[in-house]
Image (cartoon, rainbow over all chains, first blue to last red; front, side, top):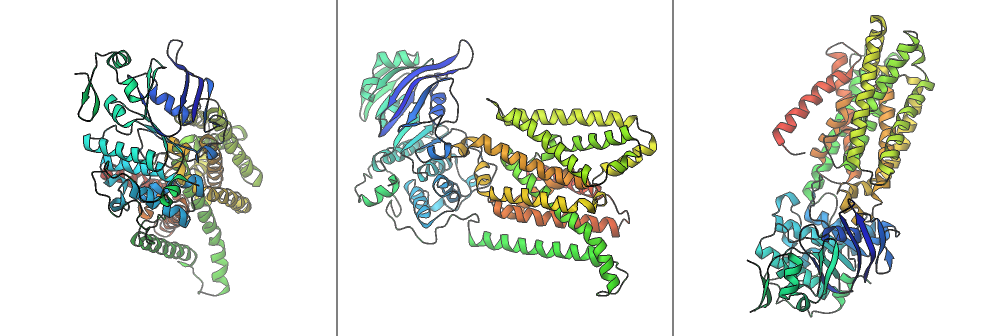
Length: 251
Length: 366
């Protein structure tokens, strides 16, 4: 379980994220949604200890993220940011291999190699594993990053807009991969999503943020309600019962 | 037990409906033994690396032997030959130490700054060196040059440079919200200020004092005084071993701050440790032979291109050998072609500068 209590980050005297009190249940996919500037990514990066907070505390599986050594946290929680650019030239397999660093310290064992292969296969990257990252398309590269995080083999996985820059097909495939990771591998996945329909279809829980505060939390059925969505996104939104589930229409 | 391990033993129950791309081999495919994730991704890459390393080793040995033996008036193997060779050997040792310092310091610095254009000299080390040397001549006059030799001043110079770095990084990076970009910028600005102070003092020198000073400010193998060579080797060796021990972490640091923290690095502490080690290496090199702006850059760049690997355990020795070849090669050319024994720095700056421009313009990627 991820617990945030009175988490606050101040930017200026007017602009602040929080105070946020939130409990994210173990298991399944939890989507963070909300308008631009609501604090979704900030919250995610604070949970992933990439950014400090001004007040409050965050625990992940009982570990306080600001006090537990980074090395120990890396075996429990992994986080993937939106922008990933490396100066070094890496093959897919080398990148995924870095995911084992918290466990092996850079000296890969046979067991590590097995887990790396599995993470690669899990995201169907087997044929690309010896290609260099700069030879891949955006969608393939994004999958490679996710494979690295899976190879890290943490119970909690945080992803900051992994669908950014992906086309329709790759977005859907990515969400299917993540859904499988949650159900088959028992991961707890927290993901920042822009498109409410992706959240409504694939997430088990939706947490809506606005002006740095949690304004709604619940199952997709509870959140996918015209009044709730319209208030969250400041846009008139209708919800229709489409052939594959609830669908928000906002055009 | 880990989650991925768990899923393997839990049996084939997964739902493939979600998956329009037919899974090749599937989730439970036996891991082939040939699938390895080493620093050299394929047999070809590995072969290439070791061939490059071997060729460089041969070149380095040849340039060392060439320096020792070429134009040696005595017959090979005679006592006189070895006496002359021994005198030249000191230059070779200096070259080996300086190449070591510059190569390893530059690669480590570029790794933790995630930038392959910067070299540690932007941090103001060379300006500080110029300022110290200039002040000594300025304050003590031409006689000050006697002060500028000996073990004492060598160690003092190193202590000053490392202290400067420790103060700068300790203060700027360790504080809350400390940021590498700002730290580097402050380093550059301070370096500029120190350089300006040195230039100002140089204008007040008499021509003869200025002449003496200039000879020390251009990177030169001949600057090195063998009295403190032992100290230089010791310091460089210890620092080098410490950095070598960090190689695995440097590989992770190269992935950038966020990924490094995600993988369990204490990023800021790691950065300060590496910067201090880098400053010690740079201080040894600069105190030994004076500023060599482009050597580190040139060597690191060649090492990335020839090595084509992320692993610092492989990059360091490669870069060291390249450094020896470049330095010894320039020294040899300077000594036997131009007959102007003294300033290797000039050749390196010309070659390095040209290489830099051509490289940047042609490739457009680092």
